[in-house]
Image (cartoon, rainbow, N blue to C red; front, side):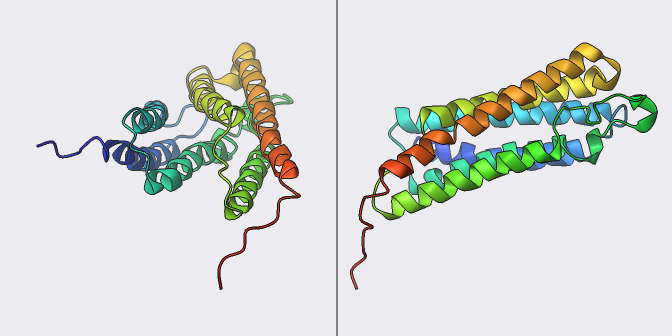
Length: 217
């Protein structure tokens, strides 16, 4: 008898993603731009990619085997946000600040192209969508993930490891094309992330006239 059945496998992958995220943060924590513990940073990149793969698998398997569960509905987006939002916090953190002796008057001060204000906007989008979804579902109306939201998650999952590869292995502050590539990818990701929140807000506006569902006394 298999240790994990079909119904449980998607949830196991979801929980595994949380552990992979913890490993990713621990490995990346050892790195300092430009050349302190580069091997640890590359290990972190591998862990992030593996975690992103589990994200693609758990949902696909749950739908294929009709194994959706309340646990998965709660934990899947939670693990996604821990992984991706945590990654952007690290990308905008002190481990990727370009040293003054490398900057030489350059306009770019972050090796990743990710700055704290960008992380604030990404967090604001996530908080807004979570609040909108909570209000709508409290009215007894289903409000699952939309196409833009899925595209946003896919783009973020692709952009984070690419940015890390460029910053860690190509020393972006010393390689103009790598620095511009990071900034271009970051701005595209930021724009898609913000735009992806619009359908949720518009959906809430369409439901603004719907009476709130009252619970029985």
